[in-house]
Length: 212
Image (cartoon, rainbow, N blue to C red):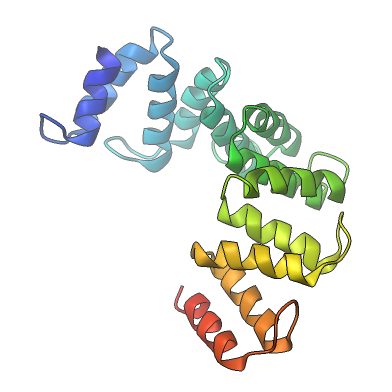
């Protein structure tokens, strides 16, 4: 009930929207080990809504939820370690939490972990593992993973080089508004990579990316 009441205040449903009231009720629920309340508190402190932005407090609540198996909290805690927000930057810890979340099917965690393998951050560089993880996330429709997987095909990293498959994936990502994919797709049209050369379409795509 405490969690649900906090949610109503957060959404402004049946009451005036009030993040401070949401925080009040979520804290009561979180102190009883309610994982969703812990996660929501982490996000509230992460974003600074209703409370001053506080990365260390965000990490505290994300960790409590992550340790209970909350997949998005695990992904967010991985991100905090990845970027050094509220904790010292630690690629190995980032990998640990991304992996736990990715194994639960979280697409963003799969994509982020794929990038760790692509760059060799916290793990040995492994393009094939990066491809596997990007594919899992891309198949869930995540635009950045579609773009990253397209790049792997474009340059033949971990897969045979394939301009047509690169083009297909870049287009899927670009259609979701990913600016880098729009730019890359524009280049593919400009130079006829995986598609017939088309300068007008290249300009259209460059414009979409440029406006972002």
